[in-house]
Length: 250
Ligand SMILES: C[S@@+](CC[C@H](N)C(=O)[O-])C[C@H]1O[C@@H](n2cnc3c(N)ncnc32)[C@H](O)[C@@H]1O
Image 1 (spheres, rainbow, N blue to C red):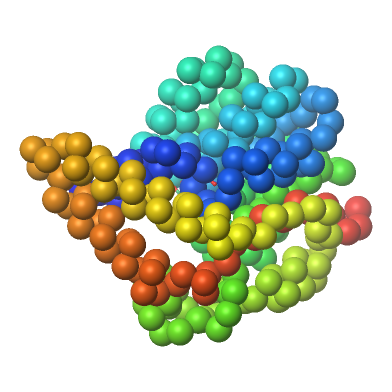
Image 2 (spheres, rainbow, N blue to C red; image 1 turned 90 degrees about the vertical axis):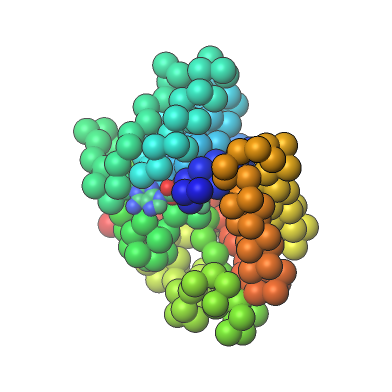
């Protein structure tokens, strides 16, 4: 079973691919998309959960999403159609680093996709390139809640240097020329809900399709993920979503 299919099934009941509740997403969008009309870009949009919520809340906004995963983009198109939003969103199957646009955007999002640019600092630089003067950036990234044990690094396939702690993350953001104007630090409850939904949806699919050739593989993938979370990174990996404005126009 390929990784994209596993991810699609695992996100059935939690379409935002990050440990964050719908209420927190709505609050962040409310602060991020403040003008009545505007254009939003999501670099690494996945199933476009953030953009579709923005469009639903803001009838005069338009959106563009970019992702490398065709399965997630197809799901985004289906959801956009079901919500009657397909004419207000453009979805591009593209490396986010290669995306170009003629017009800048009022809001640029990149949530849980900083690996697409090689880390938080290059993500801020790349996203900033697409931002109109006075625009806002909404960036979500992991950080270390505590010093990672080897089990956590192994489970994540990560190196200690891949992230810093929350204070270091905010220091980096400030040093790169951005000022946080709002944000959300995911709680333990949000992490637990996300991981239980991820592994639960995948397990349920396997149990509902016992004759499917991928059924055993899906169950094994859910078990492996649950073990990596519980024996590895639970309580160690944090997630923060920051709403940012340029500190200076220059
Ligand atoms: C953890 S998911 C987050 C998806 C979405 N932002 C959300 O919060 O629901 C990370 C996404 O980044 C995408 N991605 C990874 N590398 C990418 C790249 N180089 N260009 C575009 N998308 C990329 C993946 O396909 C995946 O959909």
